[in-house]
Image 1 (tube, chains in turn red, cyan, brown, green):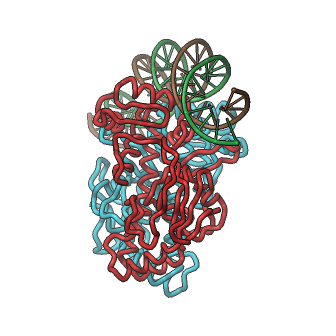
Image 2: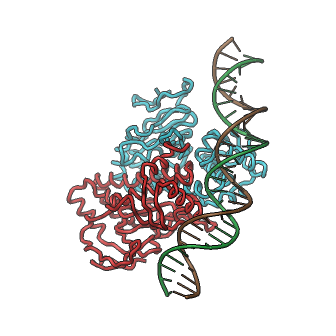
Image 3: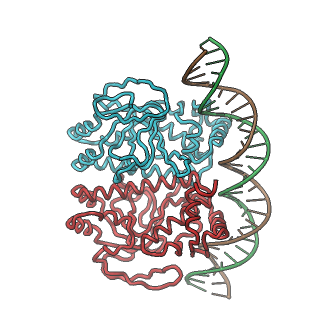
Length: 262
Length: 262
DNA sequence: CGGCATGTTGAGTGGATTCAAGGGTAGTGG
DNA sequence: CCACTACCCTTGAATCCACTCAACATGCCG
């Protein structure tokens, strides 16, 4: 699956939105330079010794090319994956072939949690762009967590956050209009870019309209129309996957579902 | 004030609209008579010694009357709750006061998981009928799990199942029609009754139409209409909250579209 | 350049919602 | 016991939002 392995300083083509360019990988000896923050939560507050030990579990990292599958439903679960770079979607397929995207994941996120406690993965994880992940052997992580209360707590947090995420999505899917869903989605994306040190006001989407639609429980035409409407209303500026946020307070009001509408 | 308590331990029930009534609790000396199975999963495969120790954590149980709140959003998290008897709903409130039911829980389920790793609960848990729960001090459970790999794995399973549940709901909310959602819901209920040793073909719902609607991301009138249509189609028989399943294969076919339900 | 995936927009349909009315049921108090 | 009341449930009619079908535009890559 992976096209690169732990060998240091491998170079790979990262088609960054807009300009096709080649980016050299930084030397992976340290993971302290993570852009993402969320999965990094595992390291928060650890004693130097424990942190070193945890970092050793992150030792290997592998590249996953756009559209490649990191893991598949009903394949054996043994490791979690921490996204070092890039973005992933997680997908569930129903028996009639219809697929629904149930998660959108960025650098710093931990993938594979639903496999914990069972031996099989419960969804597919697919790279939306050329990405890199660390494999985290769960047995070893579990063992370390057993000895390190702080790590254990951090692990609980990761899980808890994932649970809360699902709930937020349930509320979104259960009670928001198309426009409200899109506004919420855009704010989420913006926030994740901000956390990664990029602009929260101007960014490139990594998903197609259809993928966004699937994630938000809509059809692709509806997503397209919602983009257009938000544009017409002056809240954002859109051209294809390039998005500029013009009025984030108004977006926030829309997403909150409380402010203006109703 | 709760309506009963097995020991000087603190009672968790809170004052809420309702009539003051007292219900006698059975002797709590053994928890082996649990009807539910899901939360019981914690005990699966444990060595006798560990099982005894785990059971000692379950020592106290308390009654929670219909409509009473077990815990509330943003109140301190310290314990999980295992439902011994009865049913609960978990509810999220958005800022505009709109509330959405995000979970429906029966005997054997574990409540409060989303508080793990944080200090506050992330939703409300409310009894749908007079119920009884065990309080599981999380710190002690965590400590025991640290020493008992089997318990730890069981705990992971409970969490994992909760994660999967949320995903199934996302698929339901994101891609099923009203009738399909209701069919899925009814099959879930039937299955949980079956597991508890009751009839899976004839049962009483514990939720109002409005609560079902909230859970399924619909309006109460739509739920009512869907009930009527399923009735007219000969798949079920409904009168108020009394439901009789007449053609479960057809129900299953309807629900299959989403692939929900374990 | 042509081919294919992706994105936008229009017109018409349909399923779920809103608004509204009326019947049923359970719990309360006379 | 019955009437009363509050809540719950059902059903009808009209509306609206998202969906379907369809045509066309754009962009990317071989």
